[in-house]
Length: 186
Image 1: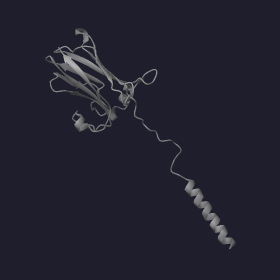
Image 2 (image 1 turned 180 degrees about the vertical axis):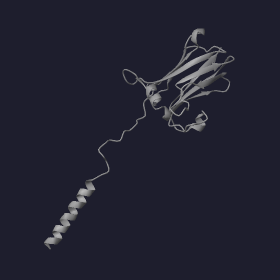
Image 3 (image 1 turned 180 degrees about the horizontal axis):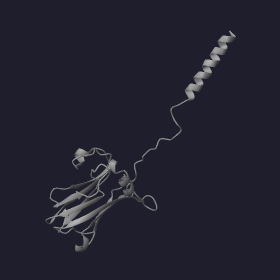
Image 4 (image 1 turned 30 degrees about the vertical axis):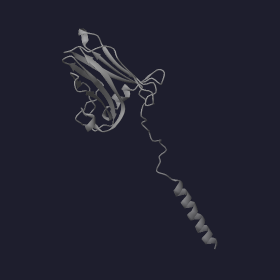
């Protein structure tokens, strides 16, 4: 009987020791949290031929119920080439956190899409790319032609399919932020 108790004790101890052992090496899993984006700024610079036009959206509560305030500093000139740069900010922090840096660092996991509404006489060409030579979109060229009005919609996608045909429909992924700017070409 003593031998049976010893055997049960040894088996119980072995069971406790092995059940406490885990495959966890003690290193916490890094979670890539989605960033809060309150502000989207697109600066369009025509160079020496004119003034920089700034498209800005500020959403004080990020994805909250408050609608963003969208402003455009002026009209684009017809038949003009603009160098464009986009910036994403989290202005709930002080100083504001520049999310654009993270988008560029994680270029393979992001893409900025530019959708031009029917009737707006402009086109967008990507000028920066990820490590696999797929478009990123933080730097672009915007080319205008004839006078017109319409919406330019900017969408930052997280983990889109790459390569894609540069449309949201083909890209998949999750939308981090999307803003439509009313644009006038004169």
